[in-house]
Amino acid sequence: MPLLALALMSAAAAQAPAQNSAEITALTACRAIAEPEARLACYDKAAGNLEQAIATKQVTVLTRKDVRETKRSLFGFSVPKLPFFGGDDEPESKQIIAKVASVRSTGYGKFQFKLDDGAWWETTEGTRFGELPSAGQNVTIKRGTMGNYFILFPGIQPLRGRRVS
Image (cartoon, helix red, strand yellow):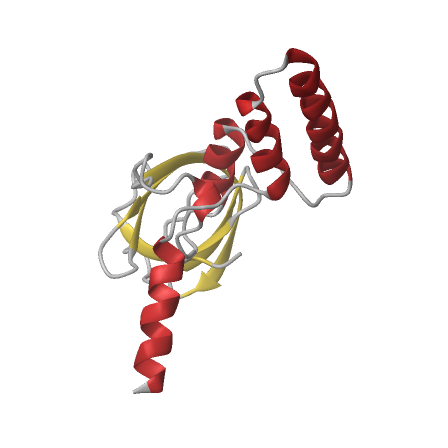
């Protein structure tokens, strides 16, 4: 029973909303100060603390663009729900379209290919006639069910595959 309780607590913690850092909380608390000079002093101190926390990498600021690019670079990997990835406000990507940087055969009609962003994928089933895509070609990779991915190259039947790095 203790293992079940630990699993439930972990699941609850994973779904809990992200809490602001102490530096952000201190900065936003300054708004409640009525006296202008005291409020300005509070903002100056809190902004300095936030700036120091960013400089020492205790706090990191991510833009939506940063989050989207990171999510895209992790497509194909099993990643837990992380609060700094925006929660549920953005739907998870169901596919990516990318350009192939290089291709290498692994035998029996299977192959590995590298995308222009550096991600390596491999097919888990062979092509019918041993056909291989070429560098510079576009590829569409679609998320399937139960961890499957479908790889679509123009002129080649859809293949199942997986992300390897």
